Length: 447
Image 1: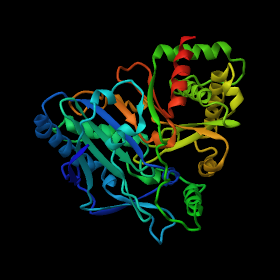
Image 2: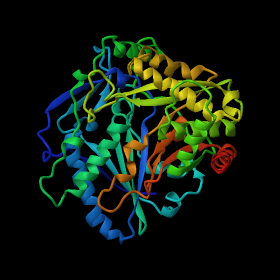
Image 3: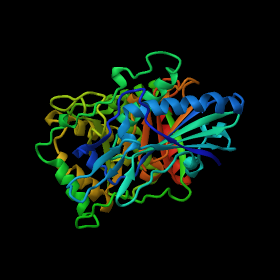
């Protein structure tokens, strides 16, 4: 890969008058993710036109619309810091702050990247930029556009998890694409449904969760450790990336299978996300074997509309809660493993009736304890509701969208599909277990 240029992008005044100086506090939703690895995604777009057309037309439009959208999402050009006199980290933004956009060219096979074959996880790592993070300061956003001459281009985005969740990150990309498409029209402005909402006062914290979560981070390698360095997770050697498809008919078949075999009395949550996650988790446990006595399935919950009172769906920042479904590994390996997984996830989701923040006092400790337990935790990133395959900058919908941060975290990535049929499930593992997972995943849909 060849770096063509690294461009400094300043928020444009075309969108709104920017504050001369500001800071944005972190809520307990943000602080929970303070040292987790950044979230990385790559969007691949087909572009078979001559290279000069990309540099003369496409790239200038991407740069200009990026400058304008940063006027709306101005905290993204700021940085995360933990002041000596503060008990919590904050986001600082100063007039004149910028982000860096890396422009590169690659002679790799674009069609290989957007194909359906298994590939080495490290193959696309160079398409996502890294955040600059030190003990005292952390950048929030990094972007890279990579051209594959006469084939396509990719947009890699890396975001700090303590500043924005998947919904906000996706909203930023959608807003950038919207403005890129609107360049020839007027007004050159974001609609209400894409305009970020910044009021932190809507997040109530009567139980002082922010103080507790911050204290938990201070104790890690502490006491009073205010370091912003994220967990140093590496891509395992020989890791293989796979992307698996569950069609609507596959998902309906799995739902009917669960209903036919379920003998319990509890309420089942047979949503597409629950069934897809349960099926992927059971396939994974069977592929990996009986390594741990128990397996926990972590389910992310968007809390925006579940808080009391609800907050705007365009709220900027993290607003993710969690539920954990824990099962004996032997039960997941059994004939009715799928039913066991769906039932346990459903039981965990039933606790939402007690309030979405029920059990929030333990979220931080579960996150930290998970580093030192024999219980295997399987997480899921993304959501089909993000509709990442709808993001069109003016040259067509993505050919493929990959979340490369799961290379390090070991989570599944669940998203919508390019053709609108069902969901895609991204997964990274070693060659032996990936082959086993692929076989189990496919055979389970044939029975």
